[in-house]
Length: 257
Image 1 (tube, rainbow, N blue to C red):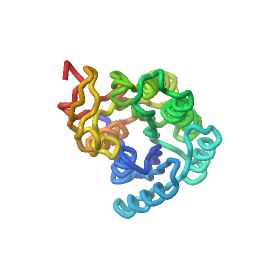
Image 2: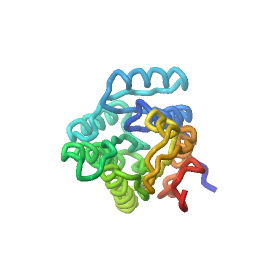
Image 3: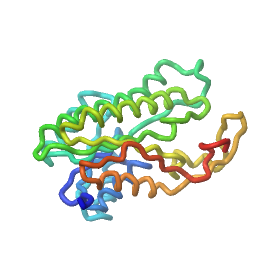
């Protein structure tokens, strides 16, 4: 029976890796022995996170600033990874943003474009560069893991830009999984529901529900998400988790809440 792959000697890139879910994923991968690159738009946040993680795990953690919605920035990011490490084994497309929760007719074009650039275009650009590197490296192949979110299947009220981009991530995941087959590039998606981060702290006080009411929602430890990503990354390249949902058990998603 083929064993799971360990992180020793492997290189991982986590976008949006300086805070929240991305930081938890980076920490878990580093703890497994991966050399981890974290990226985002705030240099100070990234550098502080990298220093903390490296000190805690004893493994290499690099901070490289990048606006993943900018093709030139993304190209420079992957060139830096290739120059320092020579390869990339795991890409976690985690970075994302949201627009204010207002009715769709009140959204500005700029707000729509901002969400599309971060959530969809950024994932595409990073995937594109990762595939190029993974095809060319020796041995070829690698794994791409996309953060789809619960919104990849089920929207919240007043969330059209975020929901549209996360639905699109599912299409990107499946297309990448298909097109990557000949080159041993596996691609899967993790849909996350109510992981406890700064972004979900308001859920205890109540968030808008589909029936118009405001209700408190339970959350789960972000560590469960990180552990799930480590599991997906640990599989040999002839096996793939195409989709996985990790959520707070009692969050109002299935049934009628």
